[in-house]
Image 1 (cartoon, rainbow, N blue to C red):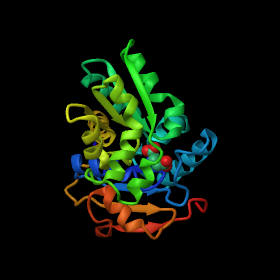
Image 2: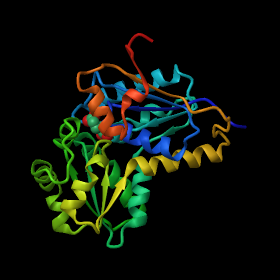
Image 3: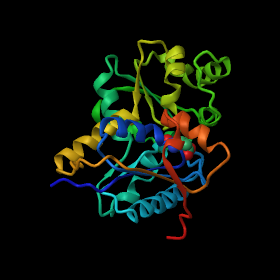
Image 4: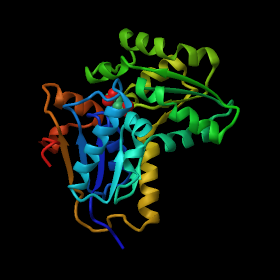
Amino acid sequence: MADSRAIGIFDSGLGGLTVAKEIMKLLPNENIVYFGDTGRVPYGTRSAATIQKYASEDERFLLSKDVKLIVAACGTVSSVAANTAKDLPVPFIEVISHSVDAAVKNTKNNKIGILATAATIRSGAHKRMIMERLPGAQVVESSGTLLVPLVEEGWTDKEDSVVLQTVQRYVEEMKRVGVDTVIMGCTHFPVLAEAISEVMGQDVFLVNMGVATANAVRRLLEETDALNEGLSHADHKFFVSDRTAAFESTASVLLGEKIDNFIVEQVDINKL
Ligand code: DGL
């Protein structure tokens, strides 16, 4: 039975567009409802209790849009607030476990780096899952806090010395240990992939959680016979809790195409 309802995707802000982009690429027939909590971003520096409260509200918003599946396209929510999804009436996909699977599958020397927000690193979610799948692995964790505003500012060029030096500071230990795989565990980091590769070396494999998650979404929809098989053109709707001045430029950096190609609506999440 095909299901034409939309896939619901949410993030603390616009970073989740890197995940939405991969889902849109892999599943071009799927309708998408994206919610970015731009009024309350960042989540990555907040306490677990606050992140859980925000995540529940974001999920409730997407449910009000009658989605068939919810994707937490946010490393921080996935690692700290996945428990908020246990009573959801629709399936839930987070971004950590699929990235971990991809990393474990790829590593040859069992040395894996995790680059994510402070809250994600504090949760230890990636490390725990890696050790379950690959006992004896060596995991090097680093919270790349300053990389988030760097991306929001559009500073992503691999030739920019500020970008390279900032990345260098966060991956020093991973380089010293000689990891062969790095999980980019924060939504913003795929747009820094070239700069990270420049610093880490081209032979270090970078796990893009958007790609890993898009594959998981497709598997789930196939298994549950819930792909949108209608011939209608896919419809994408974007909602944000604040339309900041830098919205268009930041969103376009993360989505990889102009957000003004789409309709974007501002909503008050507390007025549902
Ligand atoms: N979306 C967040 C993540 O993937 C990064 C931005 C934030 O701190 O809210 O962890």
